[in-house]
Length: 110
Image (tube, rainbow, N blue to C red; front, side, top):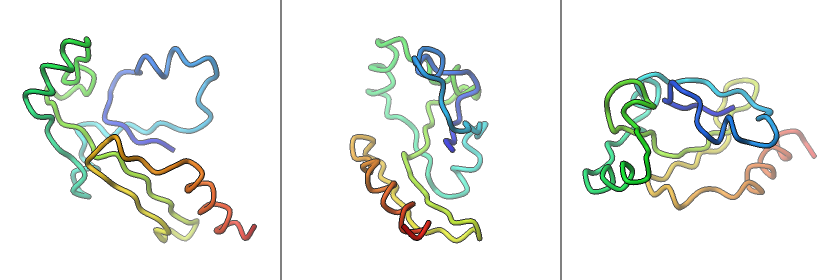
């Protein structure tokens, strides 16, 4: 499952050759991410760069702000226990998908 503040579908969601096989939940106004301390405002210098690339974050988020959630991965078991967390404000540092798969395999007892 993916959680996103965007109110509109992104180009990636609509242009993917294969439809996504997971749910996308909308966190309007970053309210849930805010409760977990996982929201930041894009600095003005980056706002200008986004605008040059045609990225209209305030409209896409539907709240008029340049706020983004910190990229994060949570693995939560069926009982609601958080088994793994990875959150880093540096969007270039993301967990490897293989790490997530390994965590899920351990949880499934494989």
